[in-house]
Length: 357
Image (tube, rainbow, N blue to C red):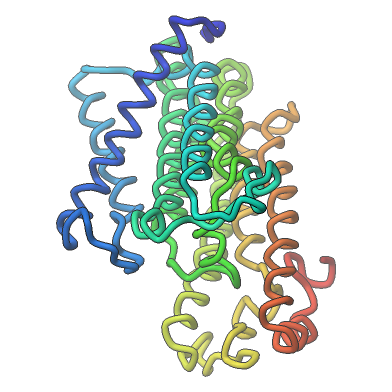
């Protein structure tokens, strides 16, 4: 099904990726004009279109084209590796261009800064560039996951239970990612204003193409091994519990950010110096939302069964990423908030897993 890399496949992949990127950019431009014109410099978090709005529009378009039998997503899989190369090239061009025209002093223009990130200019911040790249990454991931279901149906004439669960689970994950509250971690604002090659490569090339690899396994294996109804019910039940837990952590944090005196689990929210929430789920871990996200990804991996380790690559990689990111965030928080952060760590001693880590 996959085609080897060639000039032809790269050109085709470039055209497909360009159409996707421009379609998303059009939504940003429409929203930008609506909110005060292209030259505006608003810092309102809503200056970009709603991620959930983008997600819904994309799925409606794909569903309509499918019902009309106008197109299939299966060709995305034949261009899989070419699309990944194109995504990496696009990420490289964007970051190198921003780096070349940034306001960095000459002594700060190093390979390390280019790789690990530099402060974006006010204009790039106002365009919500990092939000755009994240939306493009997740939309690509969603389309690739659906493409595997298309491929299985076109090959066998039906979609297996585990493939259906795989796609639905990813839809649920993406819906939360797109609609989750804008309240971020301690340094979310700082990270959203920084961009480097490693971050751009991860967003555009790694997340869509690595995280969707379970679909390759399910196209044929899902036919050879299809779980019984009770196993599907068990996996779906665990998934729904994980989704509810993850959503609850995000909602509690967002409520606290909006109003530090809000009520969580029927009581006024407790915090350290009005900055760090210690009520609800957040009394169990400083990064408890990461725990919820990881549990959801484990459930997605379980949709592939227990006979192969390939589906487990995604939660394993994501755990490594979250460990790395949490260390970076906590280093920044400690240097920024000092004693407040130390007091917070004393009150909530664990990051992800209570009594473990």
